[in-house]
Image 1 (cartoon, rainbow, N blue to C red):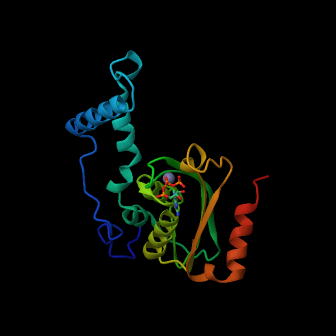
Image 2: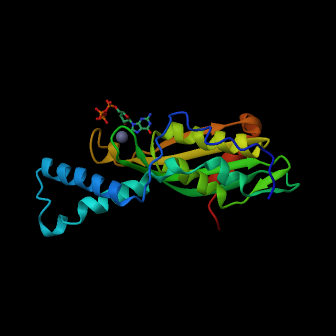
Length: 212
Ligand SMILES: Nc1nc2c(ncn2[C@@H]2O[C@H](COP(=O)(O)OP(=O)(O)OP(=O)(O)O)[C@@H](O)[C@H]2O)c(=O)[nH]1
Ligand SMILES: [Zn+2]
């Protein structure tokens, strides 16, 4: 494990997220009360058997789905940097993404494909999907999610370049609104070497190949 950086404390936190105690029973009880009220206002009967525990379940589920606010993606990457003279592209593809759009608080989900070209250091492979989870488990738009992952890897690992491609279905576009069940949104973000057409083409080619 090496430290090539002074780890900034949540310097990605440009929105000033409020720290909460996610596992505090009082918070769960308070959220459950709100969800019970929401059920009533939606025309449901929160006292019926099937819904008795629903407000608490929803409260816990939402706390889980937004836990990324409490995690520091840069610290996660910094915890597993290894000095290694490998200078070819490293690609981790088909990473499952589950996030929630900040406009409707409905899920969007799909896959992220991430590549970097090392510059003296490689990162523990599992840390890349962990970074995806940190930025996914919060209210997002897909474009910001894509950029945040790119910036985190670039600023922490300081590689020759980073490439991020994310493909997602947005339930706010499928279940309601425009109701396009099959539309998929693709976003991408690149730095350094990936701004060159040849390198980007190699990355896009690798992520389009299926495992034999
Ligand atoms: N750019 C971007 N837009 C998103 C994302 N997730 C949801 N949206 C869009 O956010 C927009 C919000 O638009 P509004 O017109 O304020 O909301 P709305 O009336 O519910 O819009 P409709 O979904 O068209 O019914 C919609 O066009 C959504 O499709 C995302 O990740 N990125
Ligand atoms: Zn939405």
